[in-house]
Image 1 (cartoon, one colour):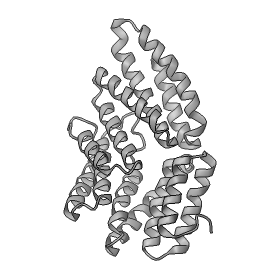
Image 2 (cartoon, rainbow, N blue to C red; image 1 turned 90 degrees about the horizontal axis):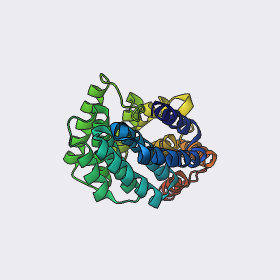
Image 3 (cartoon, rainbow, N blue to C red; image 1 turned 135 degrees about the vertical axis):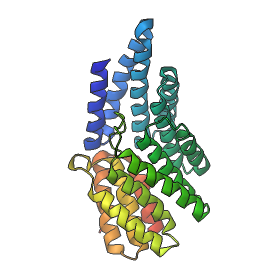
Length: 282
């Protein structure tokens, strides 16, 4: 079990560097081994083994979301939720719920995104950084859905407070990426949606997104999630009237999409360029 946890940690870091494409096959192959070990686990170690299995299933669900594989993402997230519940791992339960909310966002199912984001932060014993992530995701969903400005700002304020508190606490093995730069990007993405009709909100989006994108590590600069962050920045740049900067940023995101062979990121780029009437390349 210790070896499997170490291997999973390595795959998480590898995905940051290479994207989901090269590793989704090997991860699913390892999951066959994990499932076999879980079936055969003696009673006295099953609880620990099901916790390990839940972590692997959660990662497979995340990779499937990144690849745009809706059915696989649904299956692996459901399995991760079941195993995490059996293991009594509240942090992992909340993580899976939040990722299901993220998956709903990519499918433009905003009511589900908002409800799952709310549910995933309901348990106050859950890791503070994760609750900050969930509050920020809910705020983005509210902004995307055109909710009252005060409701969006309330969730943003909660996310900001929780992220500041989280800086003093240890992170979970699967939450190592909840860094100050990450939270700057996440909160900036909320302001980006508000910035579509409010120039001051867009100024705040540009400030946060620029800081957050610049703070990404060199190892993760080719990750698909970093490409999505660049899309948010490009939209904010375009909303500020800087079309040249937006094109340059989209071009950088397009390089990541091509290198990672990411259909999901390519789809987001297409949507953004269509919406902004910009070319993805200079």
